Image (cartoon, rainbow over all chains, first blue to last red; front, side, top):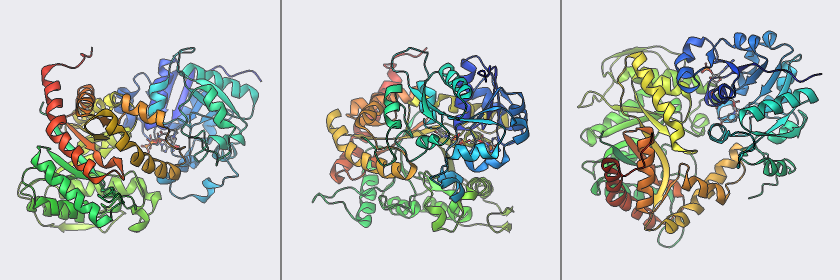
Length: 220
Length: 350
Ligand SMILES: NC(=O)c1ccc[n+]([C@@H]2O[C@H](COP(=O)([O-])OP(=O)(O)OC[C@H]3O[C@@H](n4cnc5c(N)ncnc54)[C@H](OP(=O)(O)O)[C@@H]3O)[C@@H](O)[C@H]2O)c1
């Protein structure tokens, strides 16, 4: 399978992370559609101020027109994703199980089942790759910088198909970060809360080192 | 624009003269002492945040504010924040109207969702209702502020039919802010209700929040609500020298940060991260000169009308050092910031 050509990015979630990723994607030259939970009218002003150039849309619209769909909504809302419009598409999962806003959810908290696998199972024909979940939204906003610039930070990428991983690595690169391969969707648990790489706002070398550690080894 | 300066505390437990961490009861009395000093040294506001965790002594800000009210004469008395989602808006209104009476009109409410969730199980709420609880309760609170009989219906509490709520305030309206952490939807909602916006900036570069201030102002234009001054609150600590401030602040700050981080799955704080946050991020830690310069930069970059320093973020710091921090903030930092802002001594920004 050849890498997917990305022209249009559809972002589902117009909150802290969604608006930052929209701004970065606009700067990187993509067409961006962004959706909250419903009527685009509700987010129009927010997008105009925080991510000018991005186009507010309904979730299904944003998914349908996108070459790459980013999930930036609360994980607990995943069942409301527009499955049909996402069929066959490349999907970047930036979500985490955050019990403080998602509520206590035993179905999302099983350490043996990474949450990106839950999403992959829910979207059987989509190609899910995890990325952008481990970095806080203000670091994402502040740290994006051109390739090769000193102090560039890394974003970990985990997925199934080689070609999709490569596409997302290229996408991460264009958004202003060095991509670091974290492995398969099973390995994507290493990017989840509770693992050393979670929260990482670090260089590629430092991030690679953290990805080798288990959940209990938390270096200071 | 005249800038107002406040101090924020969650009632962290400091160390007493014997070096031991004090009791919750003593910690509350220290907060009262600090507020009394703040009143004397010209600090405009004291804001007390509601928490339900062992490291903090303030779960009921209004009760502490009531104690402060009768011992002070000019400082304004605020919460920072009141966790409205797990409280009853009618009771919140009544308690603050009571503090307003005791203080001759100095009470202010800062509503928020809080950065913790302990209050949900404690008061019998379900976290899955996080959004709807806040949405409905802020709506009811907004109605109550008119101080006329209220009719309201929702799903999260009993309906009200022409309910009249007492005491009424002398001024006729409680000053109300909403504390927002970085969610654009919350900024827009705050503007929609015509509440003041208090930005909680606890990480990252302060200037990054400028678009949120812009969003608030544009939203108030769109909704036709008043564009009130925006405030910010950030953690920090003042001592006689930079070095002393950092060494006093770091251990207690790290302890709390790591304890909370463990709950959220963050790795432990590293000293380099802390130093970077002091240098360019959102920690206002240092000598009066350092803190004043940093505050003036942030106030100018964000064009805010109020700055509240969360001085209690030093956790188990020595109580005497904490009182001294309040004194330095009032006597030195605030006049220096005013001077920097009025004399154009700041690096100009294009
Ligand atoms: N905050 C961070 O620093 C950070 C960093 C990395 C990853 N993450 C993850 O990113 C996700 C979003 O976090 P956040 O902090 O940005 O949350 P947030 O500020 O609360 O924003 C959530 C957004 O999702 C939207 N949404 C809800 N249901 C939706 C649906 N069915 N379809 C499309 N959009 C929907 C919301 O729209 P409405 O307002 O219309 O409901 C809102 O715009 C979470 O999974 C989080 O764990 C967060």
